[in-house]
Length: 577
Image (cartoon, rainbow, N blue to C red; front, side, top):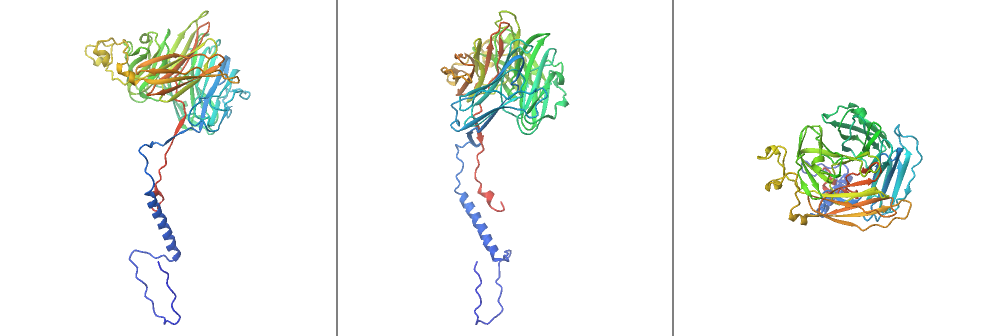
């Protein structure tokens, strides 16, 4: 655009003809507007041209984003206190040698005292033995005859990757006699549990902890053998900030022989935990925490089914509006097989079905492999009558549940290392899903028998163990177990040599963990490569009235997080786009 030149002084003034402009083109009233329009057009042109030089995402880039070490971790121990003669140890450590731990880090251990529940009596400040300063350090909180609010462990920076904690309660004398343990987990919006009951002498309590600064709006759904139990009072439960509440099954759904629980958080996040104990008159029948189950799936693997005498009861729940047909396989140290006594289970929609596994297991350690036509959740209740008793004979109980497959690193901590204790770890590598026909659909088969196609080919009985095929050696999964001894407040005992396993598909491997001298408790770390595995453990403490038993499936260790990848889009900055 050119500016108009002033008329010469000696030139005769004459009417000027307005220049003609193209139709549809406006002329700014102010010349400065022309400059503004030019600047905007120039910026738009630069952005468009510059966008041509923005590198396109590489084919090797993860479309979900970049994987980075976590910056913070949170673990909540829901019941760190102990009453009636019990002793609870909340064990805390950070697994070393993980990416992201070269940064500076910090940790805090505190009680959640905000809006404390009515059952929380005033307690002294938490006493922590040991300190979390660098990866590999260990700390513990021990409580005897003291009821405490929930315990919160927060780590940041270099101490965030690999945080693992657990609580273990030992009670040898009271009505809560048993060895009860569970991992201390972070908050979530959905929880599933399969187990618990409210028949005579049995108490199941659901603990809900809100570690956040705002109230949590929670709904609890309970199902039993006849389907969903009507509990309108469990909708819209409010868990106040930094506090906990308890839902008692005997109060909300009395006389229920078996239960499945779903916890849904409408606002906020909570940590959920489920305890179970049983007495017969004044005689204790065992106590433990019921581990949370993996989310509903058409394939559920339940590791940690302990061999030996006593009842082993499989509980299967079909949430939703569809009935489930569930095929049962057992994976043992010798291979996998379809049990004749319990090859297929029909589960009505919304119901919980109990199946006796004693005859099928024949006293063997096992992982239960369930394959269903609709998503299910499942668990196993285990009763141990007077194990290794030398004086009396009291029963103990333990639980296991559907597990999350491990593909990288998993860890469990707080495993007692005192004299008279033992730790066994079970590693199971699942094989490929095999379509198992219903016995009713198999010509020439008895109604009580079913088998996999491979087993039927050579008329092998259903209960016969099918060892893995010869070519599975090349598909074996490598698992390395590291034992980290801990003695908070004392010099750390020496670390035993790692244990390396090669586990073929369709096999279970049992490992007895060494007990280092001088350790109070252990952390065991599993590093999985070449596939996936499900892992569980058993902690046993000998007692003259019968050994105390506990254990649960392992969860993947939280070490990394996916950070969404931002891709520049110049078009978003162009006016009018």
